[in-house]
Length: 359
Image (cartoon, rainbow, N blue to C red; front, side):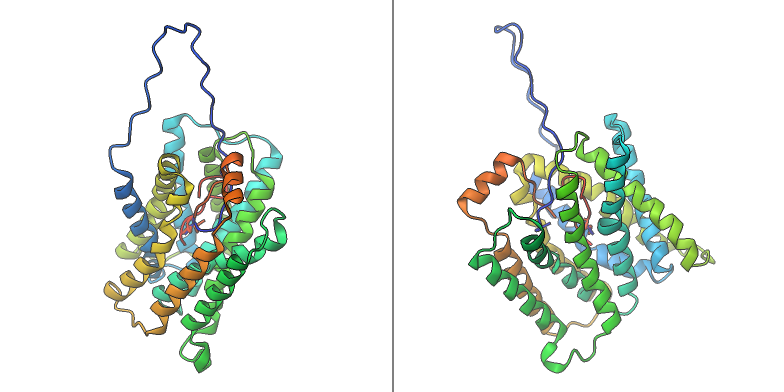
C-alpha cells in the first residue's frame, strides 16, 4: 500500500542536466508536453486507488489465502512496471550490492507488509486496517530519531508523535480494554505499518544516490518481492481449488492499479508539483478506506474509529513539520517525500527505490 507517504523516502532518480547548445543562436529545446490530465484529477484518482486497496484485500481474501493474494498482487504490479520500463527503454539495475539492498527493501516494503495486511483482514475490518496503516509516519518519526542523525527532534514533532499514538489508542478503544477487537489481526496491521518506515530508512541509508532510475530500482524491487512470495507461498498454502471471479478481479486490480499504475502516477505528481504536495495523498487514504468499508462492504463503524483516525492524522502532520533550514536542506539534497506506501499501499508507496503503495 505503499507508499508510498508522509514518511520521507529518498528520491534516487538523477536529474539529467541539459547541455547548452553549441550555437548560441540555435532555438531553445522544446519544453516537455504537459500531461493530458490536470494534476488535481490524478491526485484524486491516486487517493481513490490507494484508499480502496484495503477493500480489495478484504475481497481477495474471500477467495484466496493471504499469501496468494500478496503473490497475485505483486505479479500484477510487476507486470505493469515491466511494461512501463519496456516503453521507456529502461534497464534493470546492475551490481550484486544494489540487488542485495533491493532484496531487503522488497521484504520490508512489499512482501512483509502486504502479507501482514492480508492476514490481518481475515479477522479485522478493512476500515481498521486502513486506520492502522496511517500509523506508519508515527513509527517512521520514532525510528528516524534513532537511526537518522540528520532528523533532529523538535518540540512540535515530539508532540505530534505523542498525539498520533494517542489517536491509535483511541481507535483501539483502550479505555474499554480493547474489547471487541481481534488482537492478532490488529497487531499484524500495526506491524505492517511499522515495516514500511523500517524499509524507507534502510533505502535512505543504502540506495540514495544510486545511478539507476527510480523506475528501474522500483521495478527490480517489485520483481524481488514477487520472487520472495513465490518461494514462500507454496510452503504455507495449497493450490487454489478454483479461481472465483470477484476475488480474482480484486487481486488483479490491487496489483495492477495499487502496486503498478499508482506508483507511476505518483512519480508524475512528484515531478510536476513536488514531493510536499504529492505526499498529501496519505491524509486521504484512511478516510477513503473507511468510507469504502462502510458503504461497499457494510462494515460497522464506532465513533472512536473516525475520531481516532483524525487524531492520528493530526499527529502525523505535526511530525512532518520542518524548520526553514530543514526545508532548504531538503531541496538542496533532492530529498523526496512520499508516501511506501505503503506502497507504497504501498502505502503504498514513493518516489525512489523505496517505493511502495498504501497499504
